[in-house]
Image (cartoon, rainbow, N blue to C red):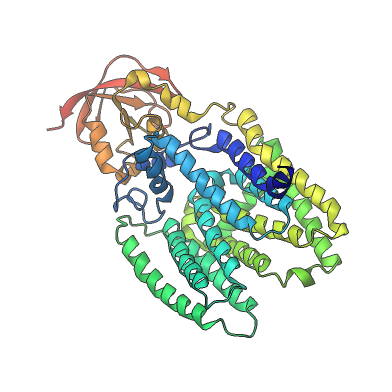
Length: 491
């Protein structure tokens, strides 16, 4: 028994870390769950193929978590939010286990789990945002390629793995088309590190066939995508790039000057800068780069980090979204993998020992930074948002009309009996018009004042229906609400 534990203790630690993360950051337990997250839960609840392959009326975002969640909803009759939470963490755990196959040292594999499941506060979206899902699928492809690298390419097993790699890459691009850039960087890196010799003819054949299959497969999948986003693929001009850099500079400045009020976030940022500077100095001074440069996976993740940092500076859509930190989850993953791979390859070097202890300390501060921020800064509680939504039970069945951030989130606990939609002045209601009209046709509707109304009007019109105020406003869950009676369709 002791031998088994000694051999597999890192897997036990990884699973424990994932469970701890689940208790704080899953859809079921996260205090800062919002309507973007609730969107996934609602799609899982009413999932239908092929129209729900992508997010409601969006031009991107493959609905992989809602699809996996159908196993738990249809077979085991789990609530949608529970099914989505479990499905997403299974996907993330798969990504960690696949990426961990690149490491030789078991302790480094555990550190990967910490970085992934207990991330620095600014990158907490890795546990719910689809960039984390995309890289989890990419991790499967990386795992397969790593297995294939030294394998005899003529065997049936090798051919099967090559086919699986192509299929996995198609899935990754479906989840998020940004994966296409990562795949290109990966293929170029592998081609360079293959040396002067040409790839095996079977690799060339599968690459060509894979490219053709991927093109037509993705064209077929995206044919079910009804969304249109004219700004999503626009490239910034020079003035836009300067504007983007200025936004990043102001964000960095706020954190470095402790202006956000998040002391642990600022502290961790300084520790990271000091740590990375020391690591670079150590690698250059001791000429470790001569060894590290020969490692294809270090090169791949470093290039991926650089490419996406550049892409986000050039992306007009990222600029429109004010250089949101959730995009930089991609950079966080790649840079973290690069740093851990360096420590893994230099694990026996005595000069790296002290720096390794510094890494443990930096990761510990980063791991607790989201908890500290939630307790001291926002929302100043660890109460899950799902519990607030459950407090709406006395109002059921009902419809809710609100500002975007207070709309869908109300439905996460019981989507059958609480139907919610953004109000008609907020364009996001068009993501699911049928849901908006269902809400408008209900006999009893509640309006949420927060972030929308200065006061509750005596009468209002929404989606072609008239509503009359019934009683005074009241506070329930996390919202200020008022009851309205449907007066019928506007003639």
